[in-house]
Image (cartoon, rainbow, N blue to C red; front, top):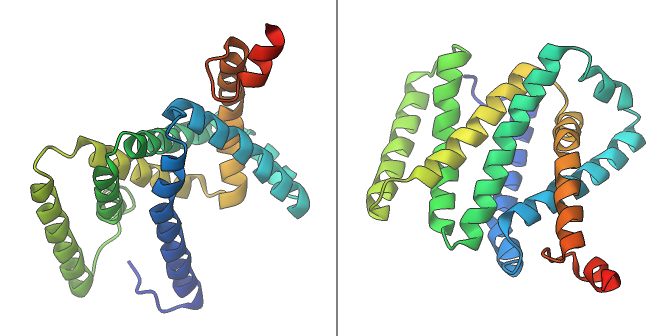
Length: 217
């Protein structure tokens, strides 16, 4: 693994800090939606993300890249796998916040960089220099202390860490632009998400179903 000395690497660190900072604020948002269950929140997240990303891709004129993603069965299978990983991560994270397991969820994202290092070594044949190995060892020790403090097997944290780490690995194999790739993934999920929203709205069991259910009466 190379040290972050190039401008691109430093920019990547800035983006990483921004992403983790945003994730740190997410629990406040999801807590405000505690009246809605995790599957419905996820369905809306997927559906509206697909709409927003479609607009971005339209403005950037990158629909050809989107179409190419469905060019072969292998590429479709790759994106289906990445979609499964990111869906698992999103769903368990939302559920963790709603179920008052924010500490476990946070622990999962503490573990995530270590999982990334592990997967990089196993599947990408990357290696660490001595100082990097020492830093990873110290980080692993810190995570171990947090796990011991929690006092139970951290299945939720491990699920979040490995699902997101595996997602990153598959996306690296896919080699697609992040914005277009996320549109591909949300497009694969969008029919299911829209179906869940519409079904719950029609039955009046979803938080978005008030209008439809009142009209039906």
